[in-house]
Figure (cartoon, rainbow over the protein chains, first blue to last red):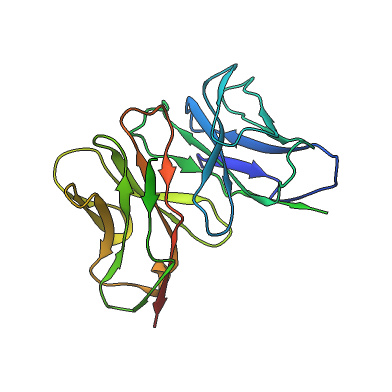
Length: 114
Length: 114
């Protein structure tokens, strides 16, 4: 089955700790995205990447970092600088990253602070 | 500021009745318009999009949406609701002068009662 796999499903972070969320896709899509979802709010873009070894900041990149060393993988690190990390994190991809393309989403990771 | 509004936090509909989930937007120029659905603890799934052409767009699971340029609206509709349609629905818009930045509504919870 082609799709996007996010892991883990649930993640807990201690204060001062960095944590990494995994996102893997086997759709052969060029573009990948990370969104943050908070209750009662629309999705907010953290980072996106259109090509390997290149990525762009979204609206709320502070306290987060990403890498794109392989086309299939786009991990997100939530650093200790992110003071309010509790949220549902969604990874998505699209074929080329054009603005008229639909997004394919993973099942999400719920991050909570201990 | 560019924005997307989903004026109803929740919509309640009896099974078999028609349903409408409202979306209005404020962006420059002619945007691309999207609807996505999210089931509990899952990622989002694409329903339909408007790029150009016929104002009535048909999508997945029997849903359709009507683009109204003068009212800057893109309401989601279905002639006969099913209990399985109960979910969270998001409207999203891409301004034509943007690069990969969807603007998301806050979401509308749709509850279909048997």
